[in-house]
Length: 241
Image (cartoon, rainbow, N blue to C red):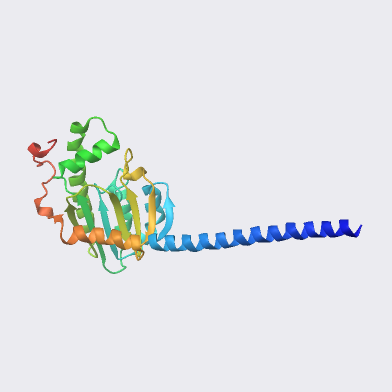
């Protein structure tokens, strides 16, 4: 009986030892993964992922209203002019809700309506079949929205809205505010409005890269607003070519 008892005891000890070794290895792997994930998340500064841009802007509307500085880079400005009436738009909430809170500076970069190549490429990526017939509409959207955004800024004495135009292919929509950045990617087959949107920290490595990207166009690679035609005076010869 003593032999059987000893065998059972050894088996139990062996099983428990194996279980402890297994749990210890799992523990070390878990700690390593957490540490690696922490380094990764620290590098990209990821805070939250939204299903679409409208959800992201709505979630951050209070912060966008409170902050005194906003940098906004987009295709045509619909990220903040997101309602049929501009009076119901996020941009109007951001401007009107800031009343009496000091000075607010909003810098806006929109795609140059003269960059027909980039506009055509964007229309193709969205999946619109009538490309030539849509170019004029997209050009007018950019010009019209820039005029609306500029007028909205002038409606508040403590808010300054400055609009410039970048002349490059579209990569993403950026809203930089209050130590954070909302990033929507211009994906194949989807508008930025319907694309997943990331909220990242501005002081992260990825956030600093996006901020540098905006500053590059704002300071040295932009088109002056006085070179952009008024709505209704678009050079038809340059549209659709």
